[in-house]
Image (cartoon, rainbow, N blue to C red; front, side, top):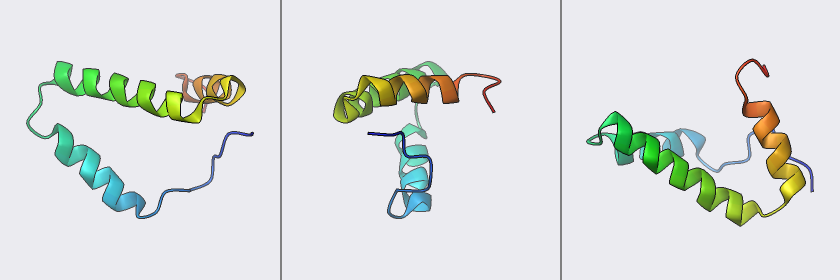
Length: 64
C-alpha cells in the first residue's frame, strides 16, 4: 500500500469542522492529547508500517 496524499475524505470541510467542534471547549493540553489519541487510532486502522513511516517523514517539520 502507498500513502494516499490526494484528497480522499468525503466532505473534508465537514470533517475539519467536526474536529474543530470536538476541541472547542478543550484546553490546549486536552486538544493535544486528543490529537495524539486520534493519530494512534488512525495509525492502528492503517496498520501498514511502511505507509505510517512515510506519513511520519512527510509530516515532519520542514518536510514541505
